[in-house]
Image 1 (cartoon, helix red, strand yellow):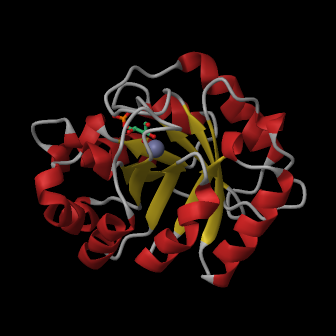
Image 2 (cartoon, helix red, strand yellow):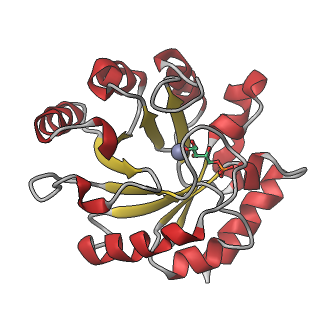
Amino acid sequence: MAVKIAPSIAAADQGRLAAEASHLQEWGADWIHVDIMDGMFAPNLTFGPSAVKAIRKASKLPLDCHLMISNPELLLERFLQAGGDIMTIHAETVTVESLARIEKKVKEYNAKLGIAFKPATEMRSVDLAEREVSLITIMTVNPGFSGQKFMPEVLPKLEEARKQFPSRSQTEIEIDGGVDQTNAKVIANKGASVLVAGNSVFGQSDPELALKELKKLVAS
Ligand code: DX5
Ligand code: ZN
């Protein structure tokens, strides 16, 4: 299965959100990574449900919604109604009970459930045995901003996750934060099936070329 590239639209020109979203498909993006932050779980404020709705209108690509919000149940349904395809909530913000409720709600909308881990959070911090998880997002920067430095010390967690979720068709494993043209291949070789790319695409002088370079690096 080819490794997917999910450009992070939070790194795009916020004054041209729909335009930026609209050409990602032609450029070869597989998903659009939508970083949703509430200013509490993460020290930044980004998209609400109406922005997700606008991105949904501008692109047919799957919307990979990364919910960096302290109470995911509060807004989950609004983001599902806005058109999010994958709803990734943070292990640090759920209990066994709330995660079960979140999974049920996500299924009601035929969406997929993802679980994200901050760099310092252990995979075993949440019991996923009973859950049907389509995506594991391993953050390799701390939540908040695009353009941060990749944290290689987190990579063992990627190998651990791939061992825990060996089937790529059942569970994608995404690396999120500081991915660029210099580390994409190594990360893919260690078992990642989705790479988030914010600065390494939208921070470049030619984002289309930068994205195509990433696709080529992980294709072989
Ligand atoms: C950080 C976000 C990441 C980040 C990715 O809070 O979850 O998705 O914006 O951007 P880069 O690829 O520039 O690190
Ligand atoms: Zn993210």
